Image 1 (cartoon, helix red, strand yellow):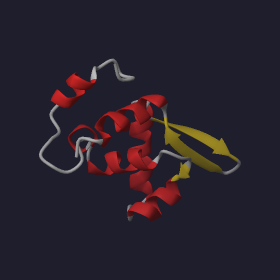
Image 2: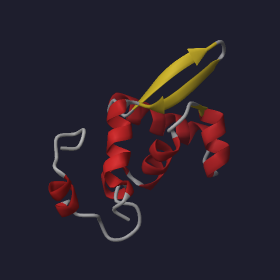
Image 3: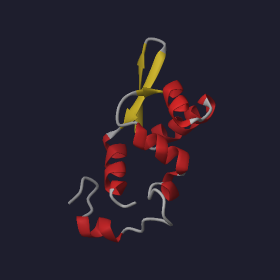
Image 4: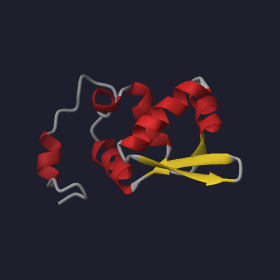
Length: 99
């Protein structure tokens, strides 16, 4: 069983979308891209620069991902860092080989 309770056979039967990243249909392209990139702590500004997105756009995406319990924020002084939760990491892991 995988961490989310599906066997590898069940995971192989999940639809992978229409090409591209299989997380895209679930989260949207930008949120899927950000979630994958949060395998380590990153700030909103860092993510905006890395992905060519506006800081406000990244902030909104991170808020949505945090409400879905896929990422978590942690404040250090004036900066807020984000990283995948175990649920977010599991979602990325399940879909990693399905491109």
